[in-house]
Length: 68
Image 1 (cartoon, rainbow, N blue to C red):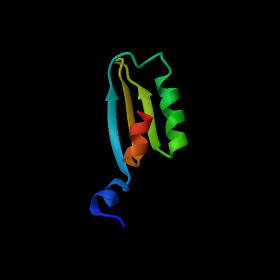
Image 2 (cartoon, rainbow, N blue to C red):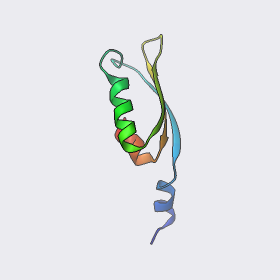
Image 3 (cartoon, rainbow, N blue to C red):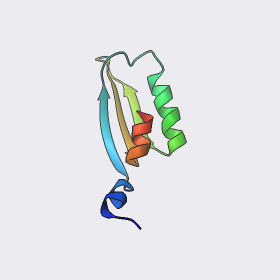
Image 4 (cartoon, helix red, strand yellow):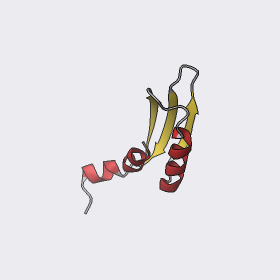
């Protein structure tokens, strides 16, 4: 039987991230896209001119957590 907490965790969410540090030139976008595709997470990821990487992901919270 589902309780409210279980039902809430089964709802899809959309989350916007900005990653700082050494994230460009290490295959971060490729790995994120590959992992997201395998988990049914949709969205986008891109390098920014300031050296950060920006990502927006939509899916179940546990799947998104596994991607990042």
